[in-house]
Length: 351
Image (cartoon, rainbow, N blue to C red; front, top):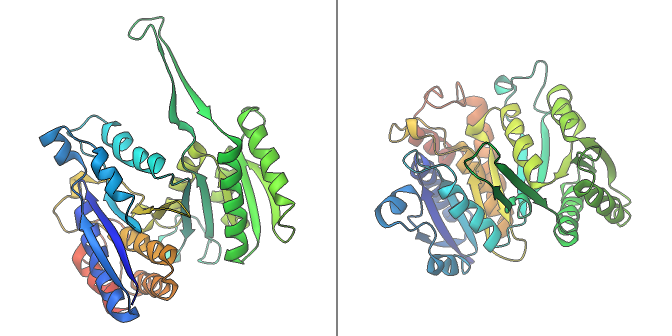
């Protein structure tokens, strides 16, 4: 029986609540599909930072490298200045564990929850592959004359051939494995960002020669946003840089029904990957047992798939789909018709 080491980071706000439901589903999946997990909890987040001043100790980072996967709830505490926890935990984990792919499926499970007129489940089914360790998120830049009327702030987008190539190649492989429309769209801004996306475009079409069965196209990021709303059915797999990927995946979340159903993965194909709901910590709902746990449960499904437990992953996703279609009145917190824990129970029941 296979055993996987899972680091559990419940995090802030409603994170512990949604992670708890994910763990409930994981336990049921283990029993049904014949694998085991060894789990270790880590209290990284706002509470630890406020008590000890620690964000992500070096010793903890080294420990996390020894796990097969990390399951994350949420990071963000209103008592802590924005950016401290996000950069110190989320970005540091992504960078130090070389999780260079951010994978975001945009899938509509029930057309009742799609804000787009006349769009069905068949129309909203695509994946965004976002480069996850370069671009504007590197923190390269600085200030001159800070705090004066002559202040200058510079933030540079760092794009390397290696970083772009491995992301683009992953996207082509994913489009091939996904085996649906076999289409890959490069999302960029070649008419304005003429250095960064010159590199992206050259690499994209160079790698494309190795995948003659994958159709390729290009769209500026503003046009991508427009078509995601008007004709989401045009997309199969989209590949893009860190910043644009961050933006269009939130748009994708709304198209598929909101943050309550949107899951993401930070992937190192040869190392430790991290899986999370893409919504924030939602502190106003903390402790009320009303937050939607399905995004976290969908992230669990992605984790199982990445670990190689494909049957368990599909069973979890199918159970989520059934619960969404047959039970829920809404995907929004407090409006589902069920509590957080009851939704988790429903998923377990339908595995």
